[in-house]
Length: 332
Image (cartoon, rainbow, N blue to C red):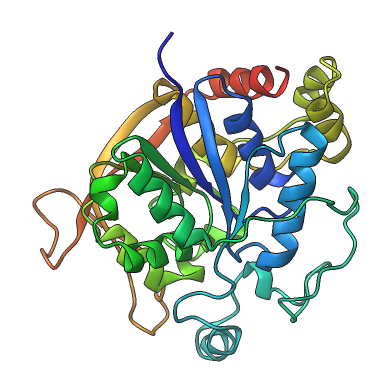
């Protein structure tokens, strides 16, 4: 039996369940993966509340051996005030994560941590920053660790600032984010097909990370996953296993929602689930106009040559095998 692949998860762990924690479940459940830690930056919600969701999730499923490491509270440059000003000039964002104060369950104070519906955690997060954790682990296991990201890339950018040689110490970067030509009528992408939350929320971090010379970069964009849907039948099948995870998902699992992060996790575990990859040079638009934070891409040979790097971009998915993998892993 081959050795398990070491992975650090960087994820905004809004919960309970959701695409965020359901993707983490796949990585934790896989016998092929050794999860070294879960780093949590602000993204879909504020960092501190998400850290509590992650801690409680691990308590419920009996995996408190995995450390939860607090990440960045704010993006490198972007702020709620800057985004509000941008919206006055260029129109409202469909989704703005932690800063969507008009949505239920969102608030302005990043330190506010109300009670969790799934119960409050009794365990504590690691006493280390996400950036320091990533660097320490990379130095301890050179060439062995995959960095799997499904959040704004702030933690990764901060880790690069601490250790510029990080790309040579890590095996690969595999991230969920970006949009190219998503075939969807979803309002979020109807008029702005290149705008995706994880990239736009911290565009400067994404720009820095994507221009870094990683040995291997895989992008799992909206294009490959937005059509997927979690169904009641999936959760009913998982519930038959009657494990703590199955009971958690049966109660909190989100039905009829796109499985963005689950696709990114499953395809890291089994690349053959992707039936087509395209190679693009990629970057992020940092101009402070209407396209700020949009994904940029070029076919090889057509990039402007100003520091853009090449990425393997997932385009088509074997849907049936992905759904089977999700149910099987969550039923273990």
